[in-house]
Amino acid sequence: MISSKDAVLGNVEIAKDTYEMILRPTKMPNILPGQFVNIQLDGFMLRRPISVSSVYHNTYKIIYKVVGEGTKALSKVKRGQILDVLEPLGTPFPIDELEEVLIIGGGVGVPPLYEVARQFCDKNTKVTVVLGFNDKDSMFYEEDFKILGCDVYIATMDGSYGTKGTVLDAIAAHDIHIDTIYSCGPMRMLEALNQTYSKGYLSFEARMACGIGACMGCVCKDSKDKQLYYRICKEGPVFPIGKVDFTC
Ligand SMILES: Cc1cc2nc3c(=O)[nH]c(=O)nc-3n(C[C@H](O)[C@H](O)[C@H](O)COP(=O)(O)OP(=O)(O)OC[C@H]3O[C@@H](n4cnc5c(N)ncnc54)[C@H](O)[C@@H]3O)c2cc1C
Ligand code: FES
Image 1 (cartoon, helix red, strand yellow):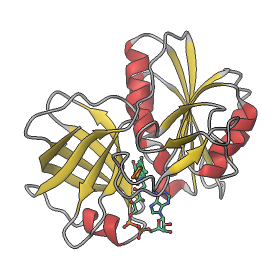
Image 2: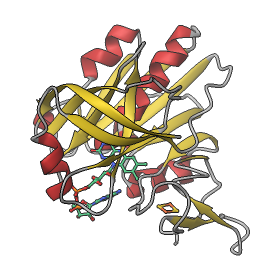
Image 3: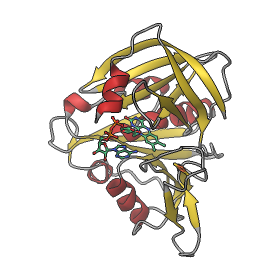
Image 4: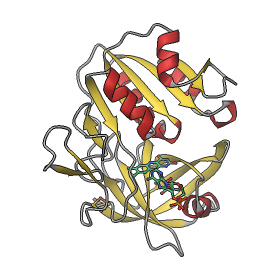
């Protein structure tokens, strides 16, 4: 992990309240799929954790939704500004040797899965992607995943695009039977997937303070040993499916 001054090369709205930002660190670190950065914003005590959505030679992209004052301030950052960023953080998704994989993203859980899909496609793994959003206006990256060569299915809660309902409704509607999943999204979605699948990885987005494993502000319990705790920012955010207890 390094503390970096990253130049903002772009910051544009790509869907309702959803922005894509391109950052160029002074020295590009090795960022793996599923890792996140922690961004300092003027006037805010705590940094804001955001997943890296894609990595290039000397730049990377993040995609974030404006949900409060911190992300609102981030949306106002202009091209050319410099951000103080801790990067990269967390344990990544392992890109295992697989013939096929099902990638399932919900809302702002979708961004880290783009780099996951890209790396699987580079290895000639067959990639099926199911993305869930509240409505059509909130949807993003359908085309980007298709360009990688993925089969892409969309679910919207209000039925304004794709299958009406959740990602599990879309999986049932399209008769998708792939047993290994890589997923990131809201807790309720992850919990439902945890009950449905037994192979793969889930990435969690807990509230965080330090983001570097020092404050214990983001702990969750092991699913079997209730005395065993994991820091989502350090041992996670990516965990093998079945490892984390959803009752805490
Ligand atoms: C490892 C990790 C990766 C993340 N990646 C992304 C990403 O790629 N794109 C993205 O848009 N967001 C991502 N988030 C969530 C993002 O960090 C929060 O939305 C952001 O910090 C909110 O800051 P704020 O000041 O705008 O909102 P606040 O004023 O802090 O909160 C506004 C609302 O959002 C809720 N909220 C805040 N933080 C979180 C959180 N971490 N998880 C769930 N709900 C939260 C609050 O409960 C409140 O209702 C990630 C979080 C983590 C921990
Ligand atoms: S946020 Fe401090 S330990 Fe995870």
